[in-house]
Each structure stands twice: as C-alpha cells, then as structure tokens.
Length: 357
Image (cartoon, rainbow, N blue to C red):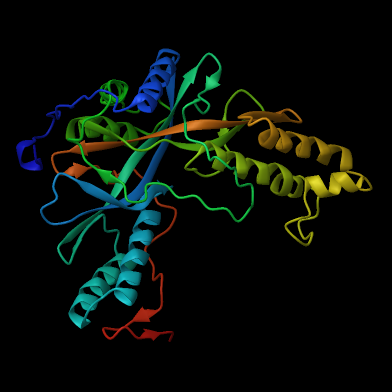
C-alpha cells in the first residue's frame, strides 16, 4: 500500500509476524514482561533528524542523519552540511554541484523542512522521545538489550545509531511491537503545563499522521536528587555507551563542575580516580566516592549508582515517529528553534573550489 492509497485520519494496517529465531523469541518475551510492568510512559519531548526518499521507493524513507537533534534547525543544519559535502566530494559535474549548492543556499537563509534535490526528497522529521515507568521508576536496560562482548571504556570510543536505517511502514513487526504501535497511536500532549499551541498541534497530528513508527531503542543517563528525574546527557546506541558517558561524567566532568578539581587542570587523566588515589588533595575523600560509583559501572555492569544524594540511572529510551499519507511527520508550528539559519561552510563554487573570503 503506497501513499496514494492513504487518506487523512485513516490508519495503515499493521502486518504482524512471528519472531524469526530463538534469540528474537527471547527478546519478545522480555518485551512482553516489560510491557506488563509498565504503568505509564514519560514523554520527554521531540527529537529531529533528516530522512530521504529516492524516486520510486515510496513508502520507504531512509535516515540521513540520526533522529537526535534537539530542535528542527539543528536537523536543517545537518542537512546543510550533508549536501555541502556531497557537492564538495561526490558531485560528478558542474550541473550536479550547482543543484546541490542551490539547496545549500536555501538552507542557509530559510527554515526549509522539505527539499527535493537531484530527484531525492529530503525531509526534516519529528520524533517523540519517551520511556516506560513502572514500580521501580524509569525503565532500565533489559537483559536482552545488546551489549559489546568486550566493553570499550576509552574516552575516544564512538557510537552511532540510525545508520542506514530504512523506515518502512509496511514491514511486518512482532506482536509486542504491533501492540506498542497501536497503544501509542492516540498519544497527545495534555495538561496545562503545555502551551495551548503545543496541545493543539499534538492533537492535530493524531489526525493528520495517525500511524506510528518505532525507531530503534536508544539509551541515556538520567539523574534524580529530588522528586523528579532529569536528563543527564545525550542518546547512545547501547546501554554500555551510556555507562561509558556516565563514567566520564562522574570521574571527570562532575568533579570540575563541583569545584573538586580545578577547571583548568591539565590532561584528561586528571580525574576523580587519579586524584583520589594520590590521597593528598583535600577533596580526595569526596572524589573517592565518585570514583567508587564509576567503578561499579565497570565491575558490576551497574545501571544505577548513587553519589552524595544523587541517583544516576541508565534508562531505556524509545522514539516514535508519526506517519501520514505522505510519510513521516515534520516539525510542528509550535516547535521552537534554538538558532536561525546561517552559512555553515565556506563558499563552494560550481567547479568544486572552496573560497574562504
């Protein structure tokens, strides 16, 4: 069923399949247990990214930049860079480069959410970030969530997600995935803490984009020193990636922010572990608490640690993308931007020459 067969407010049928192998069957059982233990969901807010659709590929779209940006303009800027580098490194001739640079020029001055370049449609898309809540609070990583065979704790380690991801609303899904999509179709903002424009746009989206696509699971750190949870970092592809980020925060960043280690202390190796081990600094005892909590992340595979009254938890983050007759939802009128369009790169001419003037 392509876009031409869909209409406003009409939901697309969901094809359900059995788990493909024993591993997926265990993951499905794990997901069912998690669903039964979820009392409610917490919605953090929107995330944005860039998708593309090549000619003849409807209804599929592929992810160009990960759906993780905090505002639409950040995603537009990533598309700006993507097209600029295509013009610089991949354009086959002046005509192709000219078309790419024309798109870049628009993105430098306009808030463009839909753009067609050389036969490919590009779109800024909006996803909702949420997490399950049960008796124990925000959901932590599940036993069946992938983990690296050999954990890399180096601070230079990198992770990516959404790479090569194809969004296909007709692809069959497992029973728990289908149930989650059905349950979240009516998700909308309610309550006076949301501005009226946000609530209005949210309820309108249920009608204009009635279907839901679930993006791959990600992970982030959250922290609590009072009644509520606060986010403590960006998204990660694995629970280990979030633990590694928390390890760095506890041993390097937090000691500096709290004045336990000078902000101008030289070297990335000057952290809670090294200073506490020396034992001569007046803050050595307090730094040892941070180091011990970080060590638990490594030795115990811990998903939650507490340091001086603050609980740090690795939580399991879900993302949903609304889908309508013409594909994934873009930014809403009430979505705000932290920046305006601007020139991201030096001027590039039709011959591929860079000008720094």
